[in-house]
Length: 317
Image 1 (cartoon, rainbow, N blue to C red):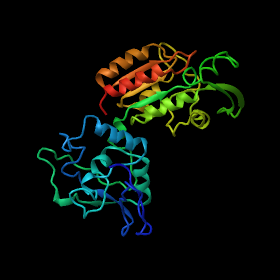
Image 2 (cartoon, rainbow, N blue to C red):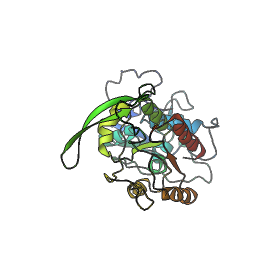
Image 3 (cartoon, rainbow, N blue to C red):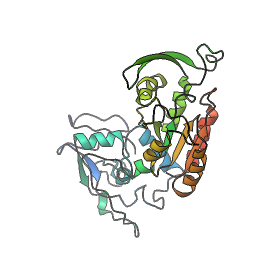
Image 4 (cartoon, helix red, strand yellow):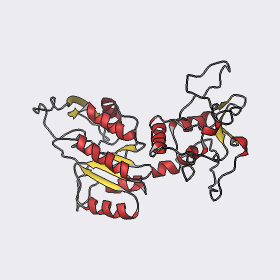
């Protein structure tokens, strides 16, 4: 079960259909299982006999909604209708979402035992993490694929103002006033296609994390994300001049630091060339790695997005 309500108000308030509160109103805390239930969907062996891909879809939906999963053993239509809904321990131990972070900061957690005195299956004694009142990134964050997104040549094709065919292709020209780090302000036009925002949101819906990797740096989040309808995205701090030198993009160092050992797909129009050898070596020894070279005169295409989708389907996370 995904989602739910966090309601510490009037006990007579009726939750919306399909929503179950994980709030302990007496303690004003959030109920969290002290350990995985005996048939937790995050235990090995598919103990709940879920259809192929069902667990991955559940996780992807919860991450896309910045929500959580409620333990099935605590739902009122389960074998223990007398217990109250609680957060799934398996999900909590692996993933961090805005809902969990807010719960931790505002209320904290109270750990409750799985219903029925359940014991884990033999051979599965994975220790649970202690509940953290200020949740930090967990193992799930470390394992989530990163999708690095450039702007110029990818979301803003390399064409001049008034270029023919851009409007027919779905692009809209916007004039932006940007203030540089030296305090100077400049004005310029960008071509933005709303479809690009929809496509990138599709990728975010798989559970992958979108990250800006552009010389625009935080200006991309401030000016372009609203035009594209994109969610808040972290920013890789790259040099203002990150043109390739000696076979390497100027972004490579900050990108290496950010992705660590996480799977990564990088959408860009300007590589130095040596990144492809780095990606191949990393793919074979550290984590799945994909570079997608975008045509700068055309910008991001559906084929580019489908390449990333295919890659995501092939990796395990």
